Length: 407
Image (tube, rainbow, N blue to C red; front, side, top):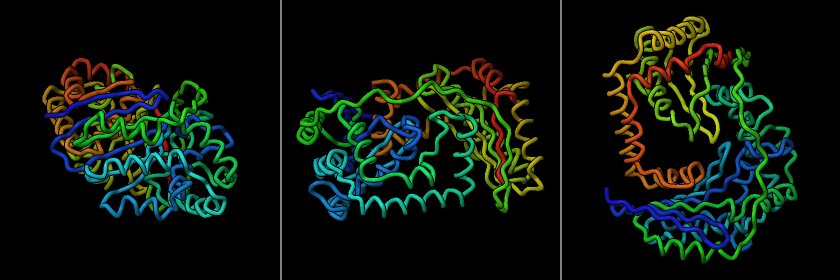
């Protein structure tokens, strides 16, 4: 694939990363801020997500309508997301509007004004978002799981915050947090598409280089996964089961073993648990695995939604399959199948500028560098069946797991 990666750092600390995709008419641009839920003060949980909403509510020169219409009028898409470790504001445009996308993103991350009236309106929106999560057990179970697995830790906090914390946000609090953390030393600009690196650097310099603020050290400590078993009655019609266990972090040398094991357990319709629980036993409609990777920690989890009368049978099947993997191992053919599956998924994502933009930003945050698709595939290919089975034995330990049921 004809791609080209380049990185520059402006004098004020802003990192500019591009990957040239000559085949693409679309350019995806993101401005990342290295601040997320795990770094928030205890009395301001959810403020990063709240700011993600609020930057679209007006800047010194644009109304909320002008922000979105500036992009949508040229056929583009403007959005943002917050995680436990970072926030990303991103835009997709045709390549001839790349500068416009950079300019509007720069405006919202530098010049948002946070009017009190808009804060009050957006507070109600976020409170509705929290209420919707409570009504969606497949979402809420993850928030509750992390709260129990990482008690009194940054990773255990809900990204949306709580009703109590969100009600406390006012213009002064939001402006101070924004001014302190959303600044050049925390910014990464990642751009993927048919772009010239030097031109992108010039545009970013034009809109961001005059800002010289430096963020303070982030508040956080090393995360520690705490095993637990809990059942919570929420009045749901179904039972929802989440079984999770600590796994490799982004930086762990065993991360490729972790990704493959996750795929084998529940990463698709050919996975072991999908076949065992749904296809063979018919005990659940939804069965899948999920990986949550962080700078110093990771969680692999299995989610199952089932009838309450089948819950114990489903739980038993999951743990039986864990023991089966440990006792009898993963075969070479099974490993080959899932390597090929992952390789195909990665190569298809390489054709998507937004996927590449996100990869550029995350790799800079995690590794301070670039990881090509080919390099990732090489890491996956190097996993041996012996190494994978040893990793499974070390990882699938019942005493180290968290088990959460919502009824």
